[in-house]
Length: 175
Image 1 (cartoon, rainbow, N blue to C red):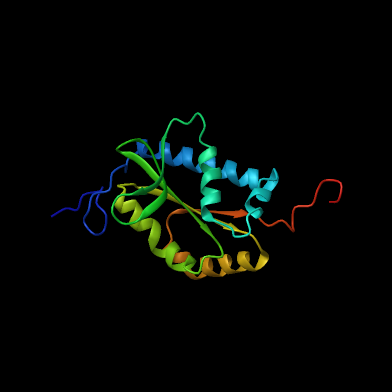
Image 2: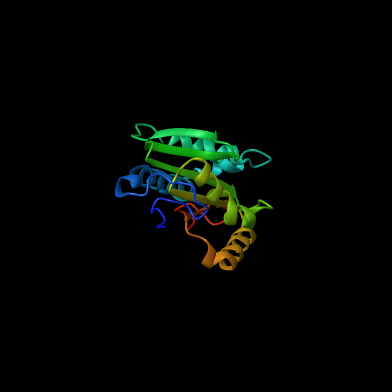
């Protein structure tokens, strides 16, 4: 018996495997890169340093703000049965993507990189995902690099690192 091309290894169907399934993914990725630029080059990192305790909710709200005028439908904290993914973006049932944010300080970073997005993709019937890691210190960056090196052969989703350090962004007059 031939296996369907749109089937997940566990046998469940995954929607959005065609060329048209990339529109929501492309739009989500462009907005992640826009947020990265705002944080790393335009001073938005300062907002993430304001609260005494850094919360993933803060980066999620900033990402949501980048979606003004979007073509895709944007939903936050979507729970389709296996936990809440940070964002599910879609243009139709066959074109959906998920975006998950994590702070590098997370004690479960390695496990989340290995399993979390895959579970969300299956529960949301998405073919593509973006995993975003935000780091605030050089030791956090070293931790992320070590974890990524350990998992190099086991990841297939797009990964974006955002540098929210404040000690490496001198003003133009000082640099």
